Image (cartoon, rainbow, N blue to C red):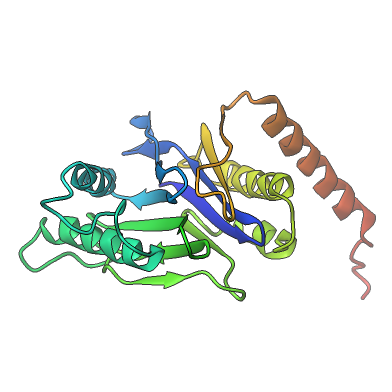
Length: 245
């Protein structure tokens, strides 16, 4: 299992992913699930992956290899004219990899599935954020759906729903997303650090600040402990239930 979040803000995009993969409690490994490409001044793209590791790694490898042989495969994610076309290329590559496992193609609930979050900006267009499904179709973030989650989504979603504000700063968004990860990590052992962060500022056309939060990161531990204390205080401040009511 994994957990990834992509958030659309007024000022740009924020991506966050864990790095834990497991095939049972005795087989836990760390693999990067966030992948970035850029042509400074022209485009910046970030992709996060969840699902079967062999499938998602094959998708990323194909996307990377095809950027190195553009004459054989046009357009690539580094030459497509829009983020919508980039999403089409990534979706087609995911569908291609999954279908190669079976002549009839695999379905979304099959062991070879994969789900992706794609975001970025290409010159002369706005930032865009997409959620790509195993079947190869996708949806785009908008005002009513300003963030996407993939992987183990249920434990960290309430924090995002309650705290998200499109006008929030990058710093506030990172805090919110780390709290979402903290709730997920505490509820599910299949999600864990290190946690990767990538920020993209609208109009910059170059990747912004990035960071990896290790398990012993001082800031992550600070807000984790603070959030636990704040929740306990909030619960204690509410009126107790009366058995006579």
